[in-house]
Length: 293
Ligand SMILES: [Zn+2]
Image 1 (cartoon, rainbow, N blue to C red):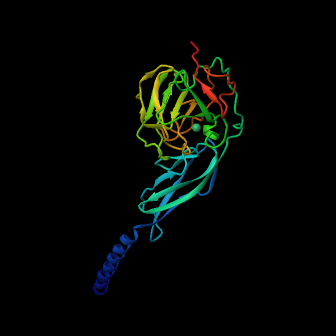
Image 2 (tube, rainbow, N blue to C red; image 1 turned 120 degrees about the vertical axis):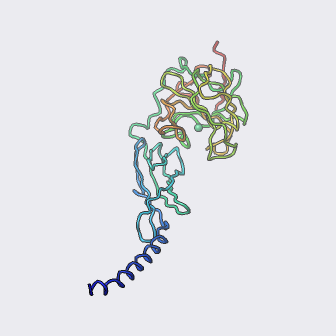
Image 3 (cartoon, rainbow, N blue to C red; image 1 turned 45 degrees about the vertical axis):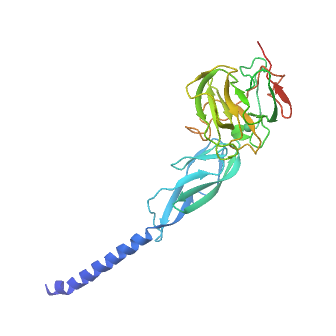
């Protein structure tokens, strides 16, 4: 009993100390650092990797909070809200994790998948189900074609950039049903791309991108006929400042920035209603949309 009474004041003091400790630790609970792992990773196109971002307080402990993720270039790497990273196409980019005002970044290198260096094979252009993606009687010059580098490598290596002024009519290259549209971006904004995807019903999906503001003339679920004007071209997204239409064909509609994963790299396509193009239209030439009726 005597020893208890001697202890009692100590218990009070200890409790006070603990209380003081508690208020100290709630101060140091504030995050002071974000730490991404793993760091400086190299992946092969198509690979996925779970990233983590620890949010660390002043005592070096995890706060248990979650960071938001972003990729500096989604044609190279996509990363979702849970930190699942997809290697989309070759390149070197950075990903960033942010918590409140704190950030951390690391470099991700993506190498082209083995065997992905060939640009073909292409089926007969005369029998192609695709028409050039603008109305009959018009003709546009190709700035980038298949495997031309710049934006047309890796995930995007099959595709065509037709130079055209903002507001030019875009025609469906093939009949199908509209999967997705976005038309909210402003011309000149490289971080935001207006686009339409059309599902042809045979496992191929066409992408029409860099459209102008309010440039989608159809809605998801609409049926479109080959040659129907479906959009107005523009200068949104990664155009390099040059207004043009990007057209490419994919084995599914889950493209970078769109719902689903970004693992549907472009596939070869050529066009039956223009000049001979056994390996698709070539750069620097104008490609007329000729009536094939
Ligand atoms: Zn392009």
